[in-house]
Structures are given as structure tokens and as C-alpha cells.
Length: 432
Image (cartoon, rainbow, N blue to C red; front, side):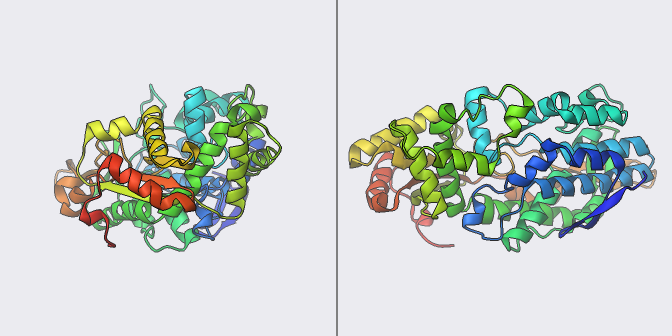
């Protein structure tokens, strides 16, 4: 592929771009990602976590190219396939709304859509379509490939470059999020991992057992980043506040009322926060509450975790029930009745952020195929959990249920939560 220029990235160094990539990057849908933080409210706990979806998208494009280029060298892909994989990586997150996955909960509630649905819509309906057509690419094909939904292809493994259990999207956000938050857990030798990936039966990606140590490090890094960053108590406090504020102000601010790409592209972190702050003189209680939350976030006055329950052993019924918003609202009302605390100030959090591999209510995490090349050139395939006791252990679950409230009500709500959920076991009341 002919290079047009390069962009300097703190994670991957120089990221070289082609003409079509330059034209896509210069569009409003991609440039808008500069105004959307990768980690929503995490910067209030980790001050360095201010990086955007824009830089992440460039990183995913780069790594998609590195992996696809390996497949070109192995004879699986053409140069045209390589360019498509890079475009898919660049466009993978173009549908994210303000505050990333926090907005997605509102989007799902009112429009039954995900950021991937929006990405496909934007690619086929916005100026992205015109750029792709100009360079000879099918917007429909790239919209599907960007979210791993390309069907009727002779190379189904193409989907897995940007959408699988160890895709380049995860690789980039692990190392990028670790770098900007300043934690050590996400440091993974992703290039060694990429160099060990091959195709199994022309269908799926697998990792050579010779690099199992790199794959184990990858799985551990995902798990540790989940605990240390993505579902950190204070990080989630900011995020549940954002979700509630956007939910209550959704109709007033038209957060999910978009009809055209232009409507949607007006939404970013700053525009929504400004909208919430514009509700200062609102008369309705929900809108006044949204304004108050926005004020609190501006001053880092976060809700406090009053109660936490960690479930290491699966209870499908319990977690599936708590995943329903109306059930959580009923429990919050019960706590309100016991304490006199306004139910708006009680948030029951059962984290379900899609970008994190280990989260509650998920079916069994997809195992990762590993292979050993036999003397005759064929591949003996197993699952990673079969050959790694460490990974087998981490393939379990750690469901987290937390109750948040405003600081003055913390003691009252803790006591009420213990009555509702039962007093916490000793193991959850000590520091680890």
C-alpha cells in the first residue's frame, strides 16, 4: 500500500496512513471522536486518563494492519484485504456516543441500539460513505467488517481481526489505557502475540502454544485492568452518576432522538455536559437532579460506595434478576423507605460495560483456541483453558454488586443494603 504520511502516537510510534485513511480521518465522524473520552469518568480517579476514542481508533487501525500484514505474508490475504482490515479498525468505534459506554446504556434503553449499530448506520449514511465509494470500497461491506459482522465471505477470519476474544481492539485499549492511567497491569507484549497468531481451518484465529506465555499475560492483563481501572469503585461512581443524569435528561436534551447522522454527530462529552449544566433553572425534579449531578461531577463530588457484594461463584438467577433496571429501582425504593433517603440518591450498580471481558451476566467467556503444529504441517488445536491452569482459573467469574449514595447517607444506606442483601461475608469486608 502507498503511504501518504504518518501520525505520531505515544503507544505505537509512527502510524503510517494511506490516502483513503487520510480522507476518512478528516471526516466529521472520525474527528468527533476527539471529543469523546475513551474511559468516560475514569479521569476523575486517574488524572492521566484523558485520552480519546480518536487516538484509540488510530491504534486499532495500526494493529489491524500489523496483524493483516502477517496474513498477507502467510498467503491468506491480499493487499486489498489488508487495506480493508485497516479501514475496519479505524471505523470500529465511530458509533460511540458521549462518555462512551455510559451513553450506550441510555441508547439501549430508549433506542435498543448499540454503538456497533450506530457505527454501521454512520458508515452507510454519513460522509464516510462518500469517501469509501470515492476510493472504490463498498460502504455496506466495510460497515459490517468494522463490527465483525461480515457474512458470505471466503475469509471469515477477517471479522476476528477487530472483533474476537483477543482482537486488536482489546490489544490497543489494554496498553493505551494502562499507559494513560499510569497503572502497570495492561502492559502486554502485543507484537509477540500478533506474531504467534495463525488461521485455523480457514475460519478462526488461533495462537501458537509456543507463545502461550504472552497469551496468559494478555488474559491476566484484561482481568487486572477490570479490577484496577474499569470497575474501580470511584470510576464506577462517576459513571453511574453520568448514566442517571443522562437518563433523566434524555427527553429534554434529545440525547437519543437523533434522526440523521448530523443529529448524532453533535453529541460528544462537552455538548452533553453543557446541556446538563443548562438545566440550572429547570422546575421538574428529574431535570434539577441531572443539573445537580453535572455540578457534582465538575467538582469531583462523587457518590460513595456504601455496600459491595462480590460473588465468585455463579448464581445465574440472582445476577440475571439484578441486571433488570426495574428490579434495581424497586430495591432502591425499599432502601429509601427504610432510611428516608431520596431514591434518586441511591444507585445499585451491576456493571455491564461491554469493553471489559469479565463482567456480570455474561455467558461463559469465549475460550481462546491455541494450536501446536505437527510434523506433517497440520495443527493440533486445543482451548487455552485446557493447557493453562492459570487461565482456567481466570475463566471464572467475579460478579460485583455495589450500592452508591451521596456521602452524608453512606452509613444509613449501608445498613439498609445489609438488610436487603444480607450482611456481607467476612471475606468481603477485609482488604486484599
